[in-house]
Image 1 (cartoon, rainbow, N blue to C red):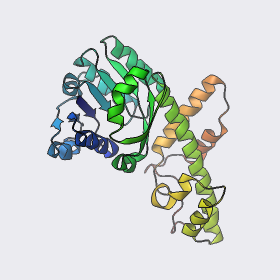
Image 2 (image 1 turned 120 degrees about the vertical axis):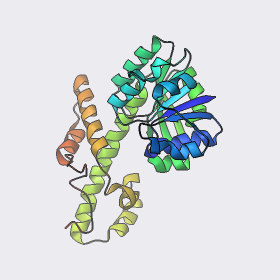
Image 3 (image 1 turned 60 degrees about the vertical axis):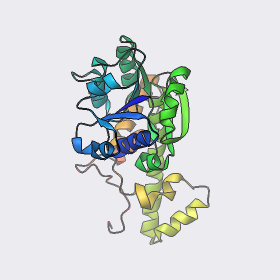
Length: 275
């Protein structure tokens, strides 16, 4: 199978490398040429534009930053739809508004091209370990066609429903994760105030009813993690909940407490030297 991959940043580069290791014929593109150097060394073809990737591949995976970049990659002057053949597939891994995924599907349908939304959870570490969670919005037929690619980086691959369902599930996942991080941050700041040893507190919590994946990895990963993505998705969740008439107190609180700063860092975070 000829596969394209657009967006070879921190997680995309690992996912694309896994595709290449699985012996797919791979062409990659990133707006920063340096991001494709290691993949070139692995034997991947390097394109000069998304349009070149679209003309080559049967399935193109996209892992770029946000909705505007997704739209540019697909619909732009050098976008995928300028060259993709009928029967080919675009897979969007980016965390975007479900409406954007559906809109891209409508545009692609005019050319006989299908769109799948398949956001992930697990980060570059999960991609390297082959343990990513894929939340997929697709027909059963498209899901099965794309599954071999997802299996190169994923352990849990779930079809959530039609196009847009993956993005919706990702928002649900982010809301729960953000509020778990809020709970961990608040609790461990209190533990710090008490003068307790934080690693020992985390060990104790692991054995109790407050146990969570966030607390287990808090010191190694979450205490200094930026919140730009979580803040954006909390806003997305609030907007969609408002349209459905659903109260969402948690994401609103998250936005009030974790306003992005200039350096995009959490203003409330555990640091041993912060108090």
